[in-house]
Image (cartoon, rainbow, N blue to C red; front, side, top):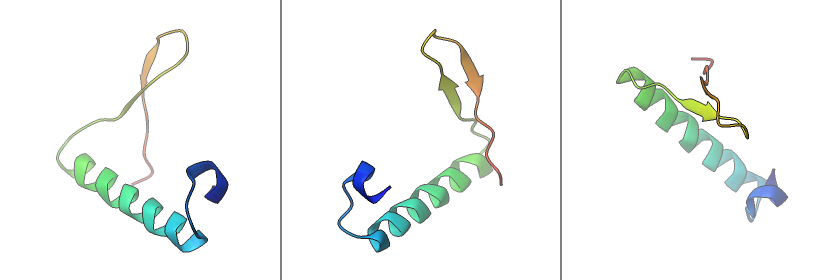
Length: 50
């Protein structure tokens, strides 16, 4: 993941991941839903493990 994201360190990868997770939790608590779209254009809910 470090190489894929261009992070300077593994600690940065973890910090970024935790920040993203915190944001996802906050949005979910507000009743928001996350959606994903495949290459064909089909949209489906993305289920978070919260």
